[in-house]
Image (cartoon, rainbow, N blue to C red; front, side, top):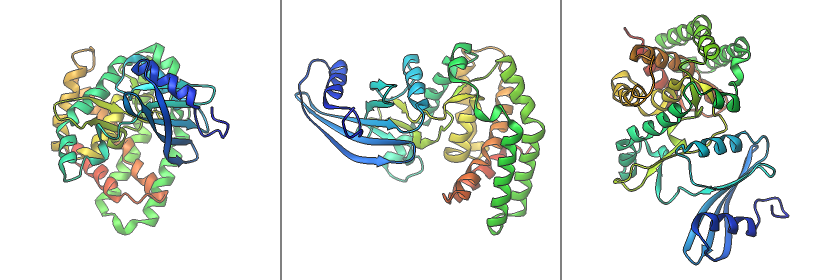
Length: 331
């Protein structure tokens, strides 16, 4: 580490680059765009070398090192993560490839421009990448031991108290933005989560059957696709929320809250995902898969509310979640 604790020293970075790119000469290393928050310090790094500029991201975790351990596990499994140059658990530092130039961020998923068009044309490739994660961890007890239970499973009743309190705050603060049918949807979802969801989850976790490791924060902004339309390469980032769960929890966050909330828009993507996993696992019918997706919609329905209550006023996301519920529970 540097003496100023801002990150890795020149020698460590140089050696990490040589391990990937071969015996090249590193002339100078520039740090730019330093970003601090309560969890980490992140820098963009440009290493001037005899092979040209090498652009990397350095991240030093301030609190726990969960994200570091989870990245290490996923990297060893061959999951679609950025190229890893260096991981150090003692200093809680990671050095990974910078995806900025050669990849398109998923934040462009709804932008009316060439990059947005490219990303939308490759959503199935993004879902294929997360399907690969799910399949490699499907009913995988070794990975379950390493990842551990999601925090709310240990006390689901307490978790639901927070969910219900978030809803009451939202209902009181923003009732003018809600229609009568919206109140009905939220209250139906709460009833489902209190009465039926615990049985679904407990059965899966106790049996360790048709359950997997999920990304846990699988929104488009945590995905990148190659800027070259001929290349279907996908990368996923930010692994602090990786945990056990229903595979459909990742799909609902990605589709219901962002890319394809309505049933007619979502079904082609869900069919694509299911066509991949169904070739590799037994005993998980399409009906069970859609039932799980509907349960995940209910769980994710309250995620935008938490954001809005915290000051991130993404009412468009809240509306998408309502559309997903309404169209998938219509029959």
